[in-house]
Image (tube, rainbow, N blue to C red):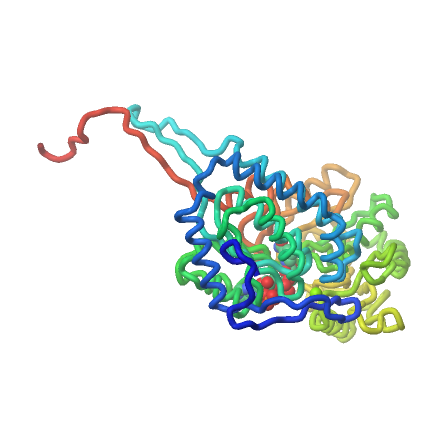
Length: 486
Ligand code: NAP
Ligand code: MG
């Protein structure tokens, strides 16, 4: 762990093994922190923020450091890709893309901090000049999941540090390794002690202690809704600023005027990229009924050809799921889908032949003839499982798409421009695509409606989440206020 500018073990000396989900082999042993380590880390962050140079230095100086970190990371893309692939299971092609995006994210926020910020007002009193500046929030607890280990760490740290805050970050117990390596780069780039601290350990101990700590000003969380709810409740103690990036059950809607092969290709990517372990996965496919039969036939044929393999294998397209527990959860949902009466088109099982025997490999799975009351349609599975439903009219498509407690993402495939835009405008979701699914950009805000979260990451919105707004009023006149008798 990295606390106050030093590499440390857990105060108790406890450790935890880290696994490669392709074969359950132990690939590392890391410290297992607890509330005592959290206290040390928050105290260090507090000092760095309250007394240290970081929030007070020129924004361009902070930016220069982040540009250095981006350069260091860019030199080691292959190493970081390998770490995340071994730790999380995802194919190298995916983890290499994540590492490049992380470099882009660092550069984006380093470049943003000295751009115009704040507002000035002409108020009702001509003798007052009013304006607003943005200031760093303070000490931020940042809690991240395992599906994009490096990228989630950078999405959190880049805007937080650029804005002048201090951080204590906790990665998932499943995937701590790339965060550790990334902190070596922060150190090498010369980040002052205490500005960013890395504490490892479980959500129920380290995470909970961070969220409850009175020295923490903000909690930024990405993860599931069950943990999100606990975090929101724990944060009420000291009215912490919170941002939550939560789950999804996002629709991918296909109208009958599309080029079928192109739409099949995107629909496949929408659900099966990163093993379906994507918060914004297009996990509900909604098809206009006239194209249904043809579409699902082509889709299932292609899904069965997806190259499932160990993530380090050349040409791997889908790796193992992150942990045995998570795989079991996904398999339980598949079993449930059968019981609920959905039609299994392909997959539906754990892969157990020789090369898969020790790993958490699940075949790409598609359930057809699903209905909105099924739990496999309503609940986030977070794995390679797609449900298919049909609609007749545009209104029906919108109603089906919006029939979810989630509202993270949505895709619409349609050649009729007016219809595509009408449908997008009617959808209650924060991230949407027309004739595409998934492309994500550091410049544009990321986050959901409804139970998919609170706040936005990335873009200018992401920087604002790490600032407080200060109103400043300057009295241009010299006299007294004269309100009371003199
Ligand atoms: P998770 O179980 O909620 O865990 C996320 C992080 O929170 C982990 O570091 C976890 O610690 C920690 N945590 C758990 N309970 C906590 C508590 N009571 N207090 C503080 N921290 C706590 O989620 P996951 O299974 O890792 O990730 C999958 C979920 O993340 C999915 O629901 C997915 O949709 C969501 N996600 C959302 C986005 C988005 O941008 N909207 C992006 C990626 C993922 P441990 O290390 O002990 O697990
Ligand atoms: Mg692992």
